[in-house]
Image (cartoon, rainbow, N blue to C red; front, side, top):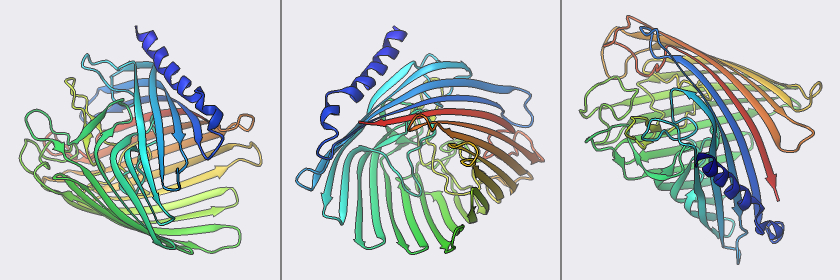
Length: 451
């Protein structure tokens, strides 16, 4: 039965990609494409510095997408749709919702299949567009993630308005989402379980961006109703140069409680216990410099936090096993890791250095990157105690785009994290430092094809 289910998902997606529509997808502005992503994850971690137990798991999955985009009929209305499927290839160790859901039996499900995107799109000249239905989201405080087998999608309404050159105003309202590891659309929730209210009615976003010459500015506000409110403002300046490029950027962000759903237990990184109403008001700022010279890319950044800057905007699917399908959030700070820790704790100062090199002169298609992050001065978010923490993270990325096969690429990422909390006790710690040590391996094989 399991093999039949896996084969059925693969057949459905492959059939969708090869359906007769491929004949006319090349005509009249229709687009049809297939995306395949093979993912392997290997994690080993220790929960805290008093523990001697190493938690580990390995998972591999195959993600497939069949994506269709129509032209705007009569110049104003169109339809886009995407079928997503994920099939488990292997798993061992502790079950997690990293690539697929954990079922009520405590084991990873074998596969899922979803109509992940289904959009009616409306166009009003060159000034405005409105999308209604299931869709990807990409903005400053909420982005559909591409780090799993398939990205997550959202159900609701979004729109953009371009009233003048360089200026764009945008807004979104969503009442459901489909997590990266799930085939089902669900209501947004907090991490509270049991009889504690946890349902978030909607997620709303409004923002604007302005680009003129070397200057770019974006401001955005996000509201998870009765739970969390966030805003962010970022600005960058690209210094004009003949061959090299240098970009300076900075940002200010705030994340605060916004109503009755913000209680102890609603966010696992809050340092409080019980179910009482809680509070949090955190501000984070950063400065960043990015320098591209020949085949090198070099960068450095520093961030400072007053209060716990909460990345996770919501959660979902607190199943009977207790495995929570947590929102990945969107961390806009250049001192965060791409796949690991946030480094956004109360009182923390984080700095990072990164370097990348494109080996095209020796090995066409090969590129490497390294990032190091150090955070110090972290304190508890909601408690007064003597705990003071520091953490560090290293990440190595190797990417190879095969020259002999168009649109085929292989990426390997290795990450290593460690933290230490002075005066640590079971009652006086920093939950934002979710592990004392963490070692991770990620392997991705990506392929796309357009008919």
